[in-house]
Length: 130
Length: 364
Image (tube, rainbow over all chains, first blue to last red; front, side, top):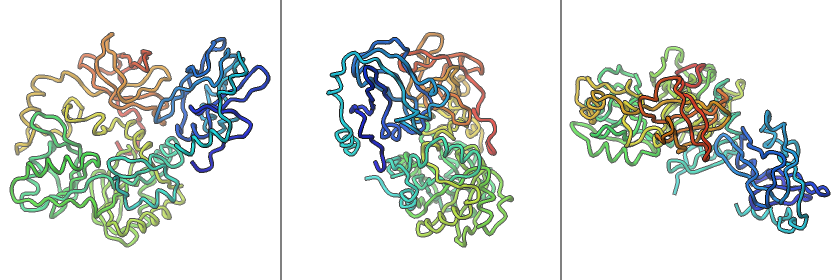
């Protein structure tokens, strides 16, 4: 899709999540491509802090006007925080998918899992093939 | 292969996200479903509805024949009046819902794009008397201009006084100098007109309408917002809310079923029996009591029992709630009754509400 943002410094999944690692914590959200596909996000079901999840597990649910979609954790760990602003402004995910539209902060169990993720170039190929 | 409508290049110009719908390429959205929905509720928006079927019934018996194949009373129509109706099979199941236009020398039927082929087969099968069936679909483009500012926009480029055309009336008029049929009809709950345009003038009319609508921020509207707008009004969508397995009485379309009209019509005996026996289920509107969103095909739970499926569901951008339609057993159909919707294996509470869900439409 034209003008889809894929920042070079982030890691990606084939299910359209992004991940940014800062020491032993990581922040995740969904990609610009994913928010454009979903469009008009109206509600997010986010996980409770303290929850322990494995890479690839369902993290929560995104409700858009037209469709509902699960999203997955790009890395194993413990949920430490979710973006409370999304409760009242879920459209932040549409407006700033890599910024104010972040979804979940995770305390990472095993940093080496990052090697399972895609870099920007590999992820871009997925979005083009789509 | 899906067809392009005469407005295809306009959709691309406006960056429409194109999908296949009813065998045509149509935009599902432009800027987004919510802003497009709000555009129609607040000022004016333009829908390409050229995928709809446009079929003329001509000949001496055109009115009698149309009266025979539709449930509403065609003989009561004045010239230039428009009527909502249904086609039913002998068992009362719905073949399609449609608009019937009574013109001075012919009848125009406007049918669903997705049912076009089936409808034509069915019309031909039941043909009787002195009638000619003329399918004009591929020659004529159809635009729906909808929203409270529609009359202001179109009046600038129309040669007749639009304030004289009532809701569900039609007229022959010139728009931007081009002869066409226009009608005060729509599928949004807002005031609006539909324009029937010869294909070769499609671009010209699109440009004239957008130029006239500029001061009201006119925008093209996709199928996504078309669905949320109609659902907030509880207007039925064929294939979802009404099908061959539903009858118009349980679909709460009794106002277009004239059981005692002068002539017999197809489905009459079955529908009389449905009425005499009492309805076993009714198509109701419900709203969610939490912030969940019901979707097509989710299970309905009445008193702990699976009792049907959501036929249409969405979040209503103007009512700010999850809303939906479903057939429920008659004993659960009263306003205020609480039911549950199985939202991906979690039961969520909903209640039956009065409809339309959106009460502030400029036409309803």
